[in-house]
Amino acid sequence: MTGGRTVVVSGASSGIGRAVAARFALDGDHVVNLDVAKPDGEVPGVRWIDVDVADWDAVGEAVAAVRESTGRLDVVIANAGISIRHGVLELTEAEARRTLDVNLMGVLALWRHAAGHMVRQGHGVLLATASVNGSRGYPLYADYNASKAGVASLCQTFAMELSPVVRTACVTPGAVLTPMQEAEYTPAMLDEVNARIPARRHALPEEIAAAFHYLASDGARFITGQELVVDGGETAGATTAF
Ligand code: NAD
Image (cartoon, rainbow, N blue to C red):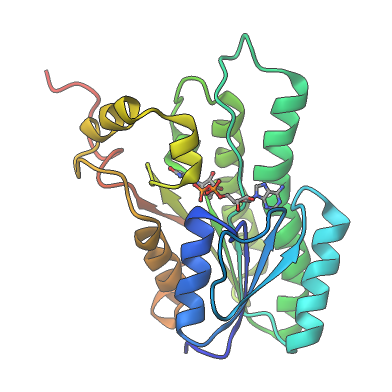
């Protein structure tokens, strides 16, 4: 069933989250965006609440308010994330903690608070944005890679504890063309990344949104505790041809 559901998406003011929120709103779902930043333009049908996902109590209050105002909580998508490019010899405690607080604790807070409501109402789907970085040692992203490995792990454990009432899944993107990518990479670097991807390009945010839309749907009702990799083949092959 789609349409009329209450869907919470964190980090939907920009990039992937914005496309995800727009996709669910198109179905007539009631979509709420939890983000520290003001939305990058209005998306019809999407309501913004100013929340830092690293603030455990604020996340709990926002989730409870959404549940209270709409009377339900069907799909919760923990998507907000940050990445800081630095070598392990350069990274600072403050930067590493912030990455883990937003990318890992932010998912845990949102899922933890939503799970209670979902168990009480007898159904729900918890989704998150992981990354192919979570299963590979991509240089210069040690803290980010670890945070995404942690997200995949949360997905498994929540499924074990909450099935069959609540389903969990992650979308695991490779490179996606969003403000996050454009801020970190020069055009030459983007070309170099594209050359390593069998599809020879970055994903569009809408292609990641389509995966979330499927995982939230009844068609995915037998999927739980798993990652859906959407990476244009980036992680399918060996790293050297001969
Ligand atoms: P983006 O920078 O365009 O969007 C991230 C959003 O999260 C922004 O709206 C930002 O304001 C919000 N946000 C950041 N910190 C927050 C906080 N503490 N509380 C609430 N909101 C916060 O980036 P994106 O590329 O769309 O990334 C979205 C997710 O996708 C992230 O989890 C990222 O790690 C993941 N991802 C991105 C790529 C990629 O190539 N872009 C690849 C794999 C995974």
